[in-house]
Each structure stands twice: as C-alpha cells, then as structure tokens.
Length: 482
Ligand code: ADP
Ligand code: ASP
Ligand code: MG
Image (cartoon, rainbow, N blue to C red; front, side, top):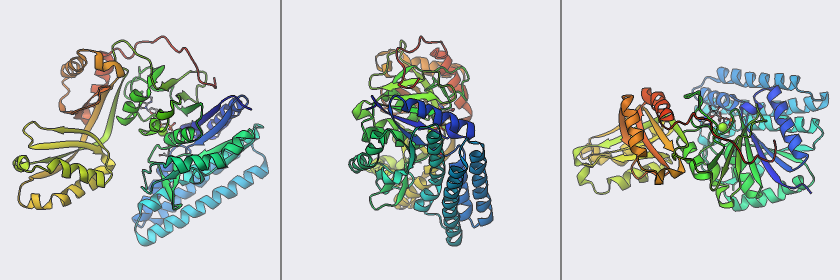
C-alpha cells in the first residue's frame, strides 16, 4: 500500500512538446514509486485556443480555414509522437486515436458551418478535444517508463450542472464515480491520466469548467478522493508576488493561504483558475504550485492558514481583459429597484461581476465584468431597462473596455494601519488616475480600477512600494515529490 495519494496536474506548457511530455511523465512515474499518483492533463499549449478559433471560423462559414487548423493540430501531435520514445505499436494506436478525435472535430466544424450556428454546447465539445488528444499520450509515456498507466476521460468522472462553458461540479455523484472508476486503478498502483477541463452533465452532455479549468479539475478530483495533496505543475516557480510578465523581479511566495491565493486568482493571476481552491478548502488539502521545468524548486504551498508576512501585502495582481459597465442618469435616484434589477440581470446571464462601485449621489452604478461577458450583459440590461430608457429614467447604459482592475492582496492587511494610504499615495506619485474603488471589498484585498494603459505602471509602483521584490527566507517544508 502506497503511503499517500497525490494528484498532479500538468498545464499546457508542461505538456507543450515532446521533451515537456517526457519530463512530465518522468515526474509522475518517479512520484508513483512512493505514492499513489493521479495525473490530470491540459491540452498541449495553444491547442484549445486553436480549436476555439476553428469553431468560430466554422460558425462564420469559413470551413476550409477551420479544416486547416485541424490539420495543423494533427501535425503537431504526429510530430510530437514521432519524437517520443514509444514503441511502433503504441505509436500506431495513439495515431489512430488522434485521427478518430480529429474526425469528430471535422464533423462538428462541418455541422457548425452548415448551420452557421455555434451553440455553447457544441463549443464545449470542440474545445474539449485538446485534452482528449493529450491524455493518452501522457499515459503512454508513463507506461513506457515502466509504471502502469491508463487514460481516463473526465466525462466518466466529473458530474456537473448543465452550464456549458463554465459548469459547476456536483460533488456527490462525482465522488461516487471517482471511487468506482479511479480507486481500483490507484489501489493496483496504476497511474490514471485524466483529461482536465472537462465534465459531463447528469444527462451525459459534455461540459467544460471554463478556460484554464484543468486546475479546478485537479482539485475537484483531489476532494472527491480525499487526496493528501495536489501539485499543480506549471511554467513558473509557484505563485509569484506579481505576474512576471509585468514585473520581472517578482518573487516566489513560499506559503500562502487559500483565501489569499483565491483573491489573487480572482483578480487575474493566471497561474490558478479562480475556482481552483473552492473544492479543497472544506477538506484542507494542501495545494502546491511548482515548476515542471525546474522541479528542484520547492514552489508555493497553499494551505488553510498560509504564513503571515510582516507588512501584510503578499502580492499585486491585475486583470486587463475586463470592461466597465455604467448605468446612469439623474432619475436613477427615483428608481428604488434599480440595483436589484441590475444584478438579477447579471446573474441571469451568468456574468461574473468582479467589482461594484456606486456614486454617492446614486446617479451612477458601475461594475466590472470580464470582457467576454460584457456584450451579453449590456444587451440583457438594455432589454431589462428598455421602458426606463424610453422614458429617460435611465439615461445611459455604457461600456468601456479600456480599463483594468488592480488588486493589492494579503491576509494580514486587515490589522495593518495605513495600507490604503500607502497604496493610493504610491499611485498618486506615478500620476495613475483611479476610476473607481471597490465597495465593500474583502479585507484581504484593496482593489481599484485604472485606465488600461496605466495597468503596468500601477502594478510596478505598488510592487516597489511594498518591497515585494525583496528575498524571503524560504521553505520549512516541501511537497511529496522533490
Ligand atoms: P498552465 O498552462 O500551466 O496552466 P498558465 O499559463 O495558465 O499555466 O499559468 C501560468 C502563468 O501565469 C505564468 O506563466 C505567469 O505568466 C502567469 N501569472 C500571472 N500572475 C502570476 C503570479 N502572481 N504568479 C505566478 N504566475 C503568474
Ligand atoms: N486547455 C484548457 C484551456 O486552455 C484548460 C486548461 O489548460 O486548464 O483553457
Ligand atoms: Mg492554467
């Protein structure tokens, strides 16, 4: 009997080419020497984007261009297989699996082009194909290293509601399916390789958990099987004090709380899907973020308590692909139900509202949603308030995509006097114009809206203000796999 159950998720870049896949397989196989290991994989990097592009092209009738993309995806996987140390028979089997999956993709794109309609349900099926291509390859590589391994489709495991493009798991049936399908494999020492990002509704329709959702798949499966820990293998040394693409001197945070990491993910730190920690929080399963390109680095440990840090601030984060929606006009004061109607409309279209601000005169309500949700939210609001617009009770419902949210995150900020003062003085010195500040924000963050062109400047200024680039003494502990 192996000592622990470890769930390992490999992101798109960690399975991005043959050498990455070989390295990921090596990490999983060597961990399996000591522990029970369940692997979750993403599609090879860029494949999901390309599949979505093919689906969108098909919708606008550009069938030939969509087929070109599918051919390029076939070529990528074929070239990858050629480079991997696999025997001829395995390679032939994998290639015929790839051809079967891509034949499905071709049919789906043809159907979409014929109807000129891409339903959320078909988009989910098409965008899920990348994980269905990568999982059997990773399993074959682990098996080639001498550790029994088999691919498992998450549609057999993760039961979700029927919300295509952002489904939520139903944990009771998911737990039952995981016990029935995965536990016997794990007990035999087999390493199951599950397709990330995907689930299926109770009626059996394929759903996805939202872009970047493989992180969430890993923690859903960790919770379902009560794993001892989850390790999310990615392309950076853990959760950093800022996005390294914005602040090159950002540092790894050795330990952080669920709450802080969730705030960071929610406010744009792409390293974690925003819902990732929801699944493991009730069970206090630790989650590690580690670099598959530098497995010698300890990474970041995310736990219930985290670790306090003097000064309170742990990280600065930002999201650029968001839009500000404002609903205004002098008569808004006289419409008592306007707030209720606004947010029941956003809830109905499932737009995720990231930040809300209301002007004190109540003539204006503004809130921020992901740019991908903005158009349908504005359309739904215009419909909801059509009478009020016609009678000029509401004067405008406007949309501004040229903004960004910046958040300062850290659990101990609540007890630390002067954090807001330092934040806004630092921004003032850099002449960053603040458009709105969050109302009723959680005490583990200060979040505000700036113009998109000021986003980088704001993040760099605050990273400097709170000395987040300074080296910290590291790590009392390491995850199971070194
Ligand atoms: P994966 O393909 O492994 O899921 P992602 O691209 O989704 O990886 O997430 C990792 C990326 O997240 C990093 O390469 C980095 O650019 C970005 N990122 C943004 N903010 C942070 C942060 N605070 N800490 C670490 N990485 C961050
Ligand atoms: N492949 C999916 C995406 O690109 C899921 C993931 O990588 O987490 O969104
Ligand atoms: Mg990701």
